Amino acid sequence: MAEKSDITLYTTQTPNGIKISIALEELGFVSPLPPPPPPPSPLILSFSSSLLPSHHTPYSWLYVNTHAAHRLPYKVHKITFSKNEQKQPWFLEINPNGRIPALTDRFDDGETIRLFESGSIMLYLVKRYDTEHKISYPEGSREWFEMVNWLFFQNAGVGPMQGQANHFTKYAPERIEYGINRYTTETRRLYGVLEKHLSDKKSSYLVGEKCTIADIAHWGWVTGAGWCEINIDGFPTLKAWEERMAARPGVEKGRHVPDPHTIKELLKDSAAVAKAAAESRAWVQMGMKEDAEKHSQK
Image (cartoon, rainbow, N blue to C red; front, side, top):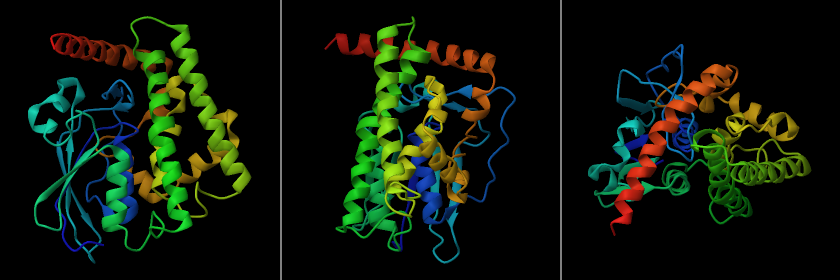
């Protein structure tokens, strides 16, 4: 593990956001603060492609430390999408695309390095900090390339397709059957690919018997399948994998950064689902309108 770091993670409670906090927990970074208890009425705070439940936390910065052997501190800055914080100039200097997660760190030359796109951040973390290969394999090995295959499968397939399924089932101003069918069907197809792979390989994780960044990248999306009206029970091997991942201490800790991860509890209450979707739909549509007006002037 690198001897020096100055990590700040910019995130919120979304499937993409919790990828990074889970990876950090799995690497040995441990928060001294217990997750706050779930609120009575979870509020959706996220972006249109990956909205999942969250709620306001009394602290906007968390200070996190590793085990005593390394004591590498990092900070977590919660980005509030409902306030369009991800579009502010200071954040666009970190991620020009105005999305989370993003991360800054002190690089080898002593200067700050910025990382954006969850896959890029995860590769950075394992190359720089995972010298013991806790959540990766030795770079250049057969297993390394297989891990990268599945990482990119999530980044280019499951995430974008399920994100659009989320949008058309929860955030579109009107019900458009073509959009719903197109993206939920494609998400189910991709789940089928994962189901077959795990079943055929008879392994605990996507690449052998080790949880890697490929598994971490998928977990937040698969555990929230019900948000886009997909029943995970139709994929028994994938469901068993999801539950195996959820039982890991690192996943349990990391999924609650920066707010409680309450998607499964929320999905049990249809009235709460409808309320959360309506609240988010309003500001998602407002943000889309602002983007349309801004770019139509160019």
